[in-house]
Image 1 (cartoon, one colour):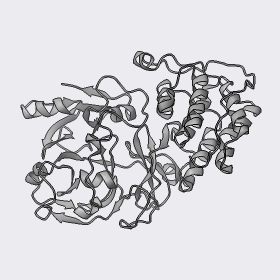
Image 2 (cartoon, one colour; image 1 turned 90 degrees about the vertical axis):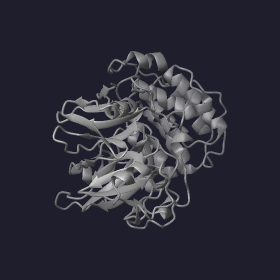
Image 3 (tube, helix red, strand yellow; image 1 turned 135 degrees about the vertical axis):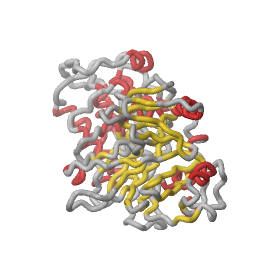
Image 4 (cartoon, one colour; image 1 turned 30 degrees about the horizontal axis):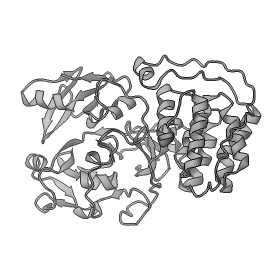
Length: 454
């Protein structure tokens, strides 16, 4: 990190401020968390001392504003490490995400080791520290958002309207490695140092899509009898599409890290609310992309479609979800010969396959603990029942059972084969807005989910 040019002296000074530690009551952790991460440290309750708050400013705010790390920061970090307050390790995690200096990385890892009482792996300090904090559900320190905002906006000023108070757990939000896509609506071809959304994308007929092979993966959507295929080659590089299909406006995020393409209706908003134009913020929450509305900068939970901050959260906006079928191009066009498909040019000349390359061996960003009932990247079909119960169906077993003519039912939900993929419907055959995802993503956003495994 260029802003931090000086190195730690690594002689952490014992300048801790005395403070009374009171174990903060938290929900009992599952046995699998203790097995994987060990026993969490005791967590103090209440405010921080004035001296410790000054140390936090010196270590996490001043070097961002002043562009240098020096002796004052060495002393401040030593004071923080000796404080015995593991809550402050969240700020160490936040700074570690941007650090490029090996010496500074190692010093921060050592400070986190002291705070958490467990050796942190300096070679993957950010991942190790963050995984433990999430798994142990360590609370954030007082005034956390203020300090975190200073760290993040110091590196990407465009986040100044993103980091605001709301119904969002800011502990879980980190940087995905790209800048915010804040280009004006319908500026698809404007260059950006971001993941560029596609607005009102060009489409072609199935017959003209000769660039697609039959075994290429697509995400298929049908609205009011009109079908469209969104090739994964395009969605891998766009990750967000604002489209109109079957007379309805849609926002379609694709999270490569979660293996999840979703579709949200963005029309029929309450009076006085413009259609949300969804964009990629460049941030992640437990390896799920964080999207926001370009008009209001309201942050949405990408997996749930709920506005968490800003004017749209104030109005209680929750986007209705449409079904997305993950299938192959050959099966989709055979079932929907009239389908349109996104134009090849939208792929920006690239044909990546991140799922089978970059993150094939599991999430590459920290996710903390994962429900052990399935492997982390097992594909599931997720839906919500009429009673509000989330349910995940193990795709591999469901697909075989459906091919064998078996019925798959959970409460009012029924699964059926559709164009080479699987969709969930209710007992009357009506769409219920299902989609495919990796198990780790579905289970962490729906921790009380039921699971069908055959």
